[in-house]
Picture 1 (spheres, one colour):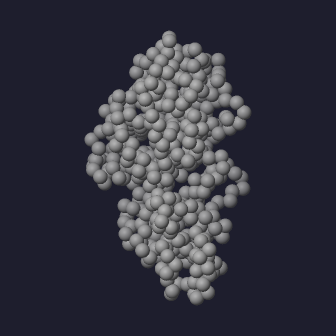
Picture 2 (cartoon, rainbow, N blue to C red):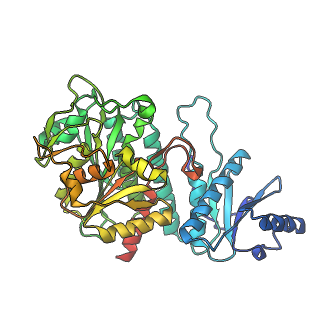
Picture 3 (tube, rainbow, N blue to C red):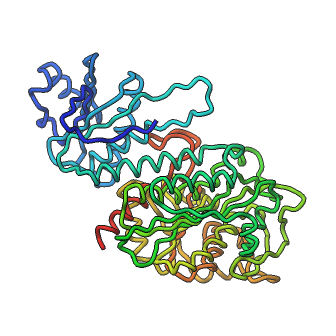
Amino acid sequence: MTATIMPAAGRQCRNIVFILDDIHQLEKNIFSELEREYIENQFNNKKKIIQINRFSEFLYIVFLNNEKERHIRLEDCRKAGFDICGHLNDNKQTEIAIKTVEPHKDEIIALAEGLVLSNYKFNKYQTEKKDNTLESIIIEDQSFNTEDFNFLNATLDATCWARDLVNEPVNKLNAEELARQISEKVRSVGGKAEVFNKKKIETLKMGGLLAVNAGSQDEPTFTILEWKPDNAVNANPVVLVGKGIVFDTGGYNLKTGSIMDDMKDDMSGAASVAASVYATAKAKLPVHVIALVPATDNRIDGNAHVTGDVITMYDGTTVEILNTDAEGRLILADALSYAKHYNPMCVFDFATLTGAASRAIGPLASVVMEKDADKIYSDLEQSGFDVFERLVKFPMWEDYGELIKSDIADIKNTGAPFAGMIMAGKFLEHFTDYPWVHFDIAATAFLEHKDSYRGIGGTGIHVRLLADYFRKMAKTK
C-alpha cells in the first residue's frame, strides 16, 4: 500500500512526529514534565529519534543535526521516516502527522518520503499477506500548497509503481505485457502511448532489438510514451530511453551461478523512464517529455544471435557481436537512433548495463557519462544530491572509442577487458547526435538486502531525481 500525503485541514491526528533543531523547542503544553525529562536525557545521549509511547498514541521527536551538509541532513530525515514507519506498522497505526517549530519544508518532505517509501511492500503473490497499516501522512505546515501535495504524491506513487514493475517475474511481465501496462498507466493520467509490434519493428529494421529477440518465443515491443502539455517550457522534448530486457540469461554467453537470479530486474531502466513520464503527467508539470522503451527477453534458442554475428542497426551501422550478454546496448542503440526524429533538447538513457559500473563504485551511486550536456548534467547532479540518488561522472575520452572498432564491421559490441562501463557508453555514443546523458544503474536499481527506505528488490531509482529535475526546469524557465 502507498500511503497518501495530505494537508491537516483541521484534522486531528494522535500520532505526531516533531522535527526540531534543539531541545529548547519542546512545546511545554504537549509534553508532561516526566516526558520532557526523558527526552532531555535521550537528547544528551545523542539519540537521533526519541519515542514517547502513550499507549493510545505515539509521539516521536527527530532532532536535526544542522552541522551536517544539507543533503546528508535530508537523508537523515528519510532514514528517520524508515524507523518511524516500521514502528507504526508494528503497532498497526494508520496515520501520523508531521510538525515543526521552525520552517523546515525540505526536512518535512524528506521525512514524508522516508515514510511512504518505507511503507512499500511487494507481496501480491504471497498467500498469507501481512500488509502494512500506514495509510495517511498529515503535514501541518502552512507553507505547503496544493501543487506541493500533488507533486509529492505523484512522484512517490510513480516510484512505488516502478518498483512493482521491476519486482514482477518474467512469467507475469514479458515484453508485450510491459508495453501494455506502461501504456495504460500513462494514458490514465492524460499522456499518450503507442506500441510498435514485431512487424512494425521489422519494417523499421531495428536490427539490435530484433537480434536480441531472435532466441525468444515472445515478440519484442517498442513503446513510445509522451506527455506534452500546452504550457510546456521546453520547445524541444526531453527524450528518455529505458532498457527493457525483461529477463536476461546472457544468451549463449550464459550467465553462471547465482548471477541470473535477479535478471528480472534488467528492465529497471524501462520502469524508471515509464514511471517518470507517469509522474510528470500526474503532477501536471509543464515539461514536454517522451520515453522510448525497447523491450524483449534475451534467451537461448536455435535462432538466437551468437558471437561472430554481424547485424545492421536501425541507423545502418553494422555491429559485430562479440558477447551476447552485452545485449542491452543493442536495443538501446536502436532507440537512441530513433530519438533523432524528435529533434530533442536532450536525451537521457537509463540501463542496468554493466557489472563494471557496480564494481567501480558499488550501490551508493549511479555511473553517468555525458556528451554536449555539461550544464544539464550539473543540474541532474544537484537533483541527485537533493533526493540522495547520487551520480558519479566517468570520462568519455576519444581514446576509448578506438577500442570498439571492428575489423569486419563498423563497431563491435564489446571493447577492451577494462573500463567496461565506458566501453558500453562509447558504443551508445556512436548512435547519438544531440546532447546526451547515459545512466548506468546496474548497482542502484535492485537490492538483494534491505537498505532503509529503499527496501529490498526494485528501488525505482531516479524517478524522484527526474521529477525533481523537471520541476526545477519548469520553475527556472
